[in-house]
Image 1 (cartoon, rainbow, N blue to C red):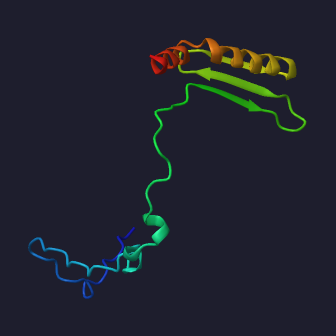
Image 2 (cartoon, rainbow, N blue to C red):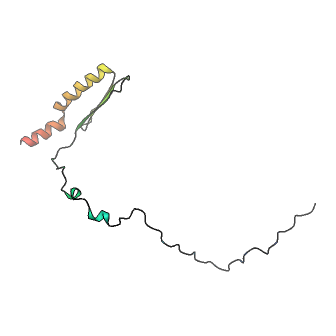
Image 3 (cartoon, rainbow, N blue to C red):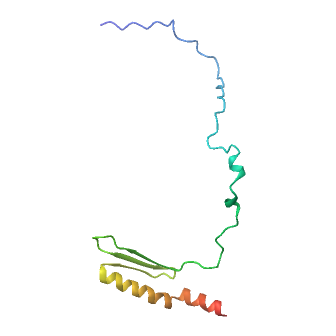
Length: 118
């Protein structure tokens, strides 16, 4: 059993004696920078905001899902903490009526209407 021979060392580079800073790469082109056309703008984009604030915010949500050939589902959610759901045709119709009735009796909505009247 003999040991394998050592490889030739002629093509190995000289080992550096100390740390060396890496060369900095040239900065590449920036992708997505405006080339001047975006600064001109379109006159329609400079008009005032068409959506004016009216101090209204959603309080109650009714989400109904009734895909063709599937069982309908519905969810009624209110910021006052009320959260109901229904599965099936009759129960979804009952939840829609219940959601409509809750809109008239919800404490968040009745307080807001009272503040506006005062």
